[in-house]
Image (tube, rainbow, N blue to C red; front, side, top):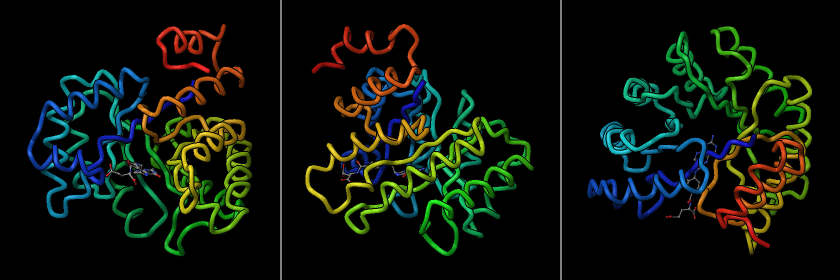
Amino acid sequence: MFEVIGERINTSRKLVQAAVAERDVDYIIDDVKKQKKAGANFIDVNAGARIGHETEDMKWLLDTIQPIAAVPLTLDSPDPTVLEMAFKMVEKTPMINSISLEKERFDAMMPFLDGKECKIIALCMDDTGMPSSSDVILGRAKSLVQELNKIGIPTASIYVDPLVQPISVDSKKGVMVLDAVRSIKAEFPDVHITGGLSNISYGLPQRKVINRTFVSLMMVAGMDSAIIDPLDKKIMATIRTADMLLNHDDFCMNYLKGVRAGSISS
Ligand code: THG
């Protein structure tokens, strides 16, 4: 089944940043409860936006969320020292967000990951920048899977993020990432594909209709997870419906559950 990573606990969001600055426990708990109720399978926690405060903000967020989080957390930071602290605090096997092929990040992350039991998001990014073709995305995904396998992380624990880019800049950016996802899944059937989707619509009006149409196309290609706002009812309904249509929902159970709960309607 498609795995939803709830993106809302991120200090780049103004209201979350204010809640974190004021140590507003109720705001954070309420938000996490809403994301879980809406069907989030993981809660992403990103405390990176208040420069110089990431360690203490991450610690406070985890202290706040941990007692009520019945779902695993996605620890979202480029800093292995923050991740090491966070890793020790979580009760459920976390997802680490993320590693990439950028040399500094890669070299810092590999010793941190070595020997750990976790899921890991692997960004198809290197020091030359955003990928320029589907072959480049595939090549980077291969390198990431091979390197992570070498330190004992099974392919089934790897979530490749192919990096979605704005279609307003280049009309081929949609098919480029769709082709890459198909090739990655052909090469590594056990690997997961995840990522943010909203970059696809950057610079265009009515972004949400683009994002949710794109997620259903990405799902046909093999995407089985995404970092999204689970409180966006329309994208959640699209995901649940597409999952059913792709035979990932036995007896249409989840679809019917969503309809009964009022979260899917025409
Ligand atoms: N891949 C991976 N991790 C990621 C991303 C990705 N982590 C961060 C990000 N992208 C996904 N998370 C968010 C969280 C919040 C918002 C967008 C992406 C968001 N943004 C509002 C905006 O841009 O308008 C902020 C508005 C506000 O202040 O509330 O809500 O791609 N692996």
